[in-house]
Image (cartoon, rainbow, N blue to C red; front, side, top):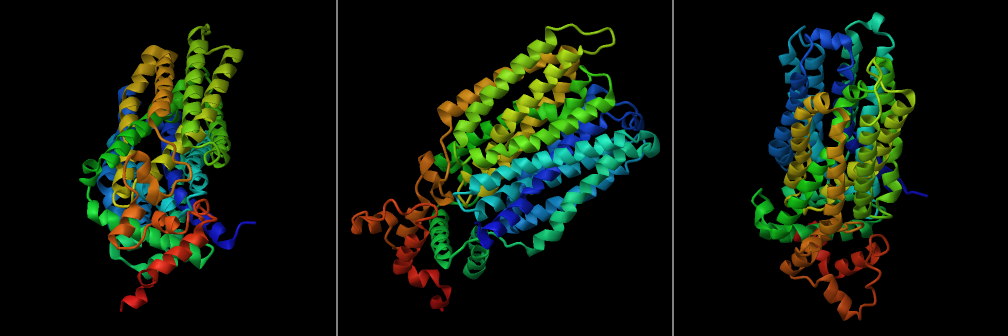
Length: 525
């Protein structure tokens, strides 16, 4: 039976994960409005290049927000402020897009830039907040909801769009405006809940050295005082060592271990978007128009796709901490590659009717294969990339590094989505052969390069990449015996006990014996 603190840990993590609903909704809303004849007429039938540009300016806003503002805001003002700032900007941008003057595609694009900027900021703070408050042995499960909520955003958007498509005569131009303005719902809810959530202990200690606030935050999400004291000590030891390194952007390049992580994470995050999922999210309406003629049928398929996306992402909850990150990424990459290969072959090697549609069996096969692609993508390159990226960096560079890595998704997305509409128009489903090859290459990259991070403590992550253990180094700097030294003195009796959960009490007793004055700030005067 889960404890009250564990339930609360899940609750605050899910609120933070709801930032991903913003991303999922907006990635789908532009896809949806492209299927509205009223939207096309309202903005004077944009060309394929303009369609790509409207999508690209969103990613440019996200890149600027994530690269240059997300990290500093999360570090200086806190993770909660970062999420709140992003939500406010999304609400403002939603109104700008909804009430753009007729024919003013520039105003609509300005709203897209602002919404991308806001999401770029929120998507840096959200996974950091979850990673810094979740216990390591369930961190993967909780972080899997980050990608799940992307699917929730798509789910809401596509079903709203489908409902509006059923009442076009009554709604008129509001068939697309209703889809756009509905985006204010989730950021409003997040803004209402954020003030009542704790900050992260790592931020309290790193920013102001506020031990009491850090301890109070941990008490709200840990079951015992022993767990709180043990984790608080480990965080402080790690931060003490990190002070000796650097907390600026230069640390990303000076430390070979961090530099290695950054390069691997860049490839994985860019790879997430060039699997083909980024193009499917943005242009599935255009893709299905090559197979189906009925706009409502396309809207329904998009809505069902988003629904299945939620179900498929739930697979990450029970697989990511059981089988590990690396296994999921390899299986997902191979599975997606085969789906794209077969899908491209089925569409390009079968006849098209005079009306421009495929036969019913071929259409069903294509839809099935694209749904199967989502089945492989969601728990692997969808959820697991976010989990892996948010947990591999140490506190001194985490906000900057996660922000930069997350925006590599938008860099890749911007490049691919700019040329994909034209590519699709000229080459059709032959474009999918490219995605098939990319996915196989990504699976090979993970197999040979990416280490497993399952159930590794955040403060000990550096050792996987050839770096130093921040807890041990911090303890040495402060003049306290390391855990290895203490264990050796006791004959190694507790070596197997210092684990994620069972070892909390033992570790707390050891640290209390050596560091009583240090843990209790009142004794410092």
